[in-house]
Length: 90
Image 1: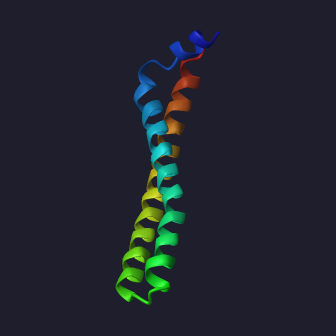
Image 2: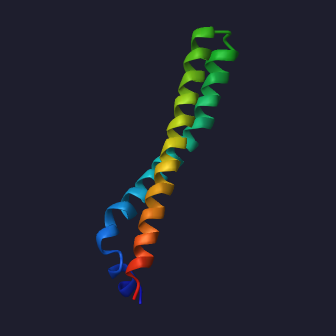
């Protein structure tokens, strides 16, 4: 049965793969945010170093926006892949 369902992906293999890839990237960026926050507190706030605070703030914002972008792309490709999969079902 699983092989039958996999066979219905057909021309939607690329969106299926891209959806998984963007989801993995989103998770990586989301997981990195607490580590950046820890560095912000350790190297910026405790040492009263404003340049480190600005650097880690910017890095955290970049991670958040990249995570948001990857999440949107993952949802977009997942919608295309799932609609195509449903279209191909007998």
